[in-house]
Amino acid sequence: MTVKIAFMQLSSCWGCHQSLLNAHMGLLPILPELEIVYWPAVVDFKLNSLKAREDGEIDIGIIEGAVRTSQDLENLRLMREKCKFLSTFGTCACQGGVIAMANNFPLEDLIKRKFMEVESITTENPKEPSVNLPGFEVSAKGIDDCIKIDSYFVGCPPRTEAIVSNILSLLGKTPFPLTDNTYCDDCILNESGCLLDSGILCFGAITSSGCILKCTSKGTPCVGCRGPSNTLSSKAEKLKEFTDNLQDLNEENKKTLHEFYPLFNNLPMLANFLLIGPKLPQMPSETEELIVKINEFLREKRFPKNLKLSSDFISISTVCDTCDRIRGRMKMTKVKRDYEGIPNEKDCFIEQGYVCLGPRTNAGCGAQCIKVNAPCTGCYAPKDYGFHHGRYREKDWAEIVVREFNVGLTKEELLTQIKDHIGTFEKFSMAKNPQYKEGYRGKLTGQWWLEKKEE
Image (cartoon, rainbow, N blue to C red; front, side, top):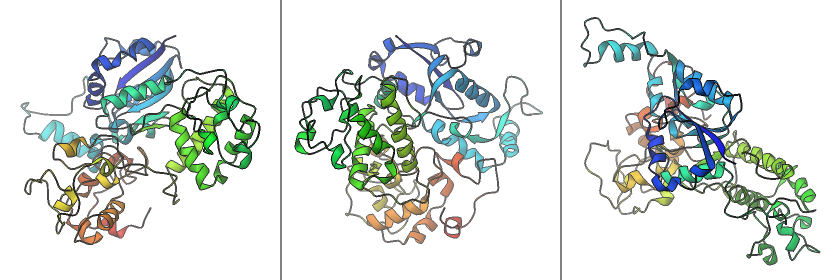
């Protein structure tokens, strides 16, 4: 049975869809599973064909771009009505993207510049067009500011292989078939010594049989790497007790929980995929109930509110973790602008004096910019704050840089020497800046990052 899928493009550069099409033959494992019902960027579907479908008729909707115009907002709400599961696709959709940099200016100034003052105007009495141009929203917004979203995958654009693996995950494609028996059925601890009975979180009760590693025979819990089983073990009731009280888990069990979730759901590692809502049905309802509880718990922990988490529980790699540049051979004594000299290709950008957001940006891009001698600008979203949590925390970045890099500047000196804070730290997340979320509120000036209290 095929899955109905629809793609929508809002205000964007089309780069995310191009990255998907770059998969070429890599799309072959996906296409037979899909019935494409709307994809105007590739197939000649008309919007009326989407409007004519029943609400909730489409299984999966994938959206690229930010909300900048009234038409964007209408199309977004239409997709939410027609799709059971809706995913953002790329940094503009997740965070607002570069488009939202316009939120730094009043809308009337933007319209005046674009249609009346730009040097390329040739008409004698230029004005804002009123035909074939949708009206503008007061501010550019990320999609989740307007409707409920079920998953996110970020990137500007997302890597091609990450897109393919994300879509396969949404389709419920697991590397192993679902079996009728569970891991517990042939576990060596089934009769006595069960880890669950000892207060150790173990997911064998809902995991398919067939594992040859037999982790529990070595005293370590099953983390669900073979995916869900068609049935549940009698131990599932004990597992349910754990999921009813996730907030009381000790650190060791939290680590197990964090390891289990992506493996069991076949979520791509370092592909910057964040699942918010339950996926399409693909497991017993009792198992789905457990997963939903875990999902909600991890989501709360992934976006903490003034909560300091153990680094053992939330371990998220940064771009620096995937960068092979050498640290310690140079020392930053002043901040350089991009046009000041050419950085060498061996040493750390920061220690050469250039601003690089790698220390605070999620891994998953493969450090592609760095490999072509350009510093990271943060398109894969800030570490610990999620794809849609808020603006980039420059104070956090500065603290890391001063503490972990060879830098001869204080945090205050470092931030003072950066000339363009919005362009540096909010290039992709301006839409999430609370001062600009509902439109222009006055420019940020001076050392505002030092004057404001921690959020």
